[in-house]
Amino acid sequence: MDKLLITGGKTLSGTIDISGAKNSALKLMAACLLTAEPLQLTNMPNLADTRFLSQLLSSLGVEVYWPKGASEAHFNAAQISSTIAPYDQVRKMRASFNVLGPLLARIGHATVSLPGGCAIGARPVDLHLKAFEAMGADIVIEEGYVKAAAIRGLEGAHIVFPFPSVGATEHAMLAATLAKGETVLENGAREPEIADLANCLNMMGAKITGAGTDKIRIEGVTGLKGGTYPVMADRIEAGTYAMAAAAAGGDVTLQGAPVQALGAMVDALRQAGVNVDIGEGTLRIRRNGTALKAVNVDTRPHPGFPTDLQAQFMALMATADGTSVIRENIFENRFMHAPELTRLGASIAVRGQEAVVTGVAQLKGAPVMATDLRASVSLVIAGLVADGETEVSRIYHLDRGFERLEEKLTGCGADVRRTGAEDG
Ligand code: UD1
Image 1 (spheres, rainbow, N blue to C red):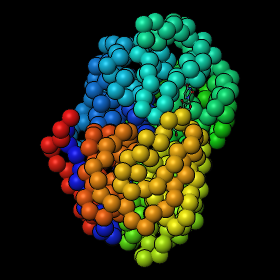
Image 2 (spheres, rainbow, N blue to C red):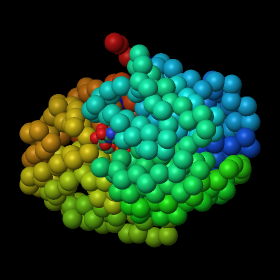
Image 3 (cartoon, rainbow, N blue to C red):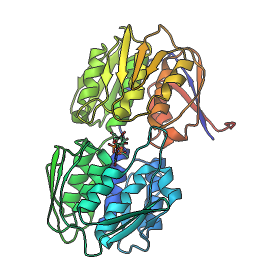
């Protein structure tokens, strides 16, 4: 297994191109199951997670043409040969669960493994299943599998979510496109990826309004067509490099960044004393010698501060002047990076859902271990500012969601190398 070796202390300068959004691509790929016509996605990020979902789609009978390294992928679900997504596939990546709704809507039945727990908390799927039941599906859970059937098709429903779950909102929206009549989703999530999915589905002939607000209306149609759609830019990747540049210092321009989607992150960086210039599709991040100020953040559903940038912000605050309180409100167990950052010399006390970070003058390189996707990149950010060498192991977590990370960082002057020999 690979690991990353980072020699810290270099400031960053240059331009980083932002890739297509992983979290959007995964749902857009699931949308191909809704139509017998080909769906072509452009600006596709080449990541372990997107490649993994394309394998699962192939196993369901979807013809996939996506050459290695290409940013265009073709999915043709003219023939669906299986409606079963087994445990081994859903366990590895929770977003695989999102094939259930499209299969149910198009074929009338599906059997998909429950995703189970994961490193950042229990992550149930009850809200997904309640939405399908409201649409008339019969759901049985047996031996770890969700068996869903709607033999006469799904019916439109009025669904009020108790919590704005991103996955449940997207999943219900996917299924409702082919339901009979109107579906209204209230208190749904407003993340930008939801509007991206709605735009793609509308291009395919769906009738969705209100995506991006907390009330989404979907007028069911009898069939969807194919087409070509560009995956939106990755706001979490952009936010991550913004924090890397802010932490290491220097002058970095993020090209093709989804600037409208990054408001809460930009506010937090500016409060920390970082210069952020917003252009058309660009974010320029500058910090030249000025100290970072401690800032408190609370993670919230969009448009609040994203949970997927919480770990990176903690790495940034590790060397800020003063004490910052970081509160995680979305997931119950998302501070596994805190003890690893402490190994690099950070001073962090975790109390329940809060982490209190007392800035230190200097971090020091050490061996650390990645525990989940966003946690792992927070260790890379800390490694960029630490004195000496930081070795990050278990970077398969990183490869799930960051395309060409070393290349993007070394292109700006960072010293980051991948080595192949990892023990244990
Ligand atoms: C998605 C993102 C993830 C991001 C998260 C929150 C993808 C592939 N992943 O995950 O990167 O961190 O949104 O922005 O897009 N919940 C329930 N019941 C449910 C569903 C969710 O209780 O049926 C809870 C979860 O346990 C969690 C909270 O709701 O505590 C938020 O989860 P949700 O918004 O659904 O996140 P995901 O869609 O899993």
